[in-house]
Image (cartoon, rainbow over all chains, first blue to last red; front, side, top):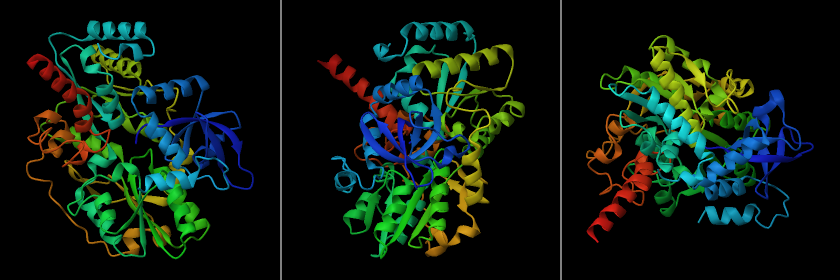
Length: 106
Length: 375
């Protein structure tokens, strides 16, 4: 629970306060940006995500390192499952919410 | 040395471990506590114990939120969720944690509507999706996680979503460190401070540990090199007879913390006068409860909570392990009755629990060695 997942902001959702879309190794998910209110990230910035909320901005280099750490700790799968679990309405993503809800509630 | 090929920079690792050997006085024993469960996991995973000289002992601290939650809170949460109109939402980490009346998964098998969520925001989404149901989010975690719950509650209030509430179990790390320092059977030389908790609270809240207790604290990252560098920084201070707070994890941790996160926490939560911790007992002002202005979203106010108190299984020594007095393998149940597949205590459930970390990386290795030596 203490580990955080690195993601790249690919979109700031219009009309929704402090919500962004991040990409984590190819998977796109919605994250909350409200905890970075003092220094909101822009498209292209990297953030550390914890339980669906971006908790700090980081450099791309540190993001890569963090992903490697998750891999080495054997937590990539858990991290990806978590990221896939974050909500994304109106998504055409084949690995979208319903699929993962089905799996996790099994 | 295990996993050496996975290290970011083997040469730097070698340098750091040489520096540790140079700084550590062979005539002295060093007891350093890593506060955070994520650090415990990394230390076992990377076999850092094998790199350190034998007179440096790493003591595993209380920073595993699942592990420090007393069993009665799980029973309480699940007791109010028994009503067929309620959806009980919790993080996956919680699902196999045993309460006296069973884990959330076991309650699900008996008919309680238990759902895994990955974010408190998703629990709020569930409430919007099922307006005829009441969703209770079982909130758990230190200051890393509490701001996310706070923002979710603010959002529930702003949108006036009335079928959502939070059963709050958030705890704060500093009073737990204080309780450990006050414990008479514990002698420590310094602390590897938490990484991600510190992104929120910053480094200042640790200053009393250095000033009043004379123990150095270094907030640390999770890579092997981060942890070794933090140990070097602690040894340098001990060598020079100093005690101060240092930040090894500057690339993520701002000295002042995250002001926006602290602000939302202060708006939504207040300190409880006291809260029970597994292994540490009741600690004053060590946990958060929901403020009066969010009373409508506070599950403890909305529902009648039985306030269950459950003693840990007699033979299990979770408390001693949590305080760092016993090593996981010194518990009578370790590896026998209590395994990650059939956990008796929470320390065997979470990957950040020292028992699970020790079992997965040290104990399994020793079994393989035993089998090999028999063959």
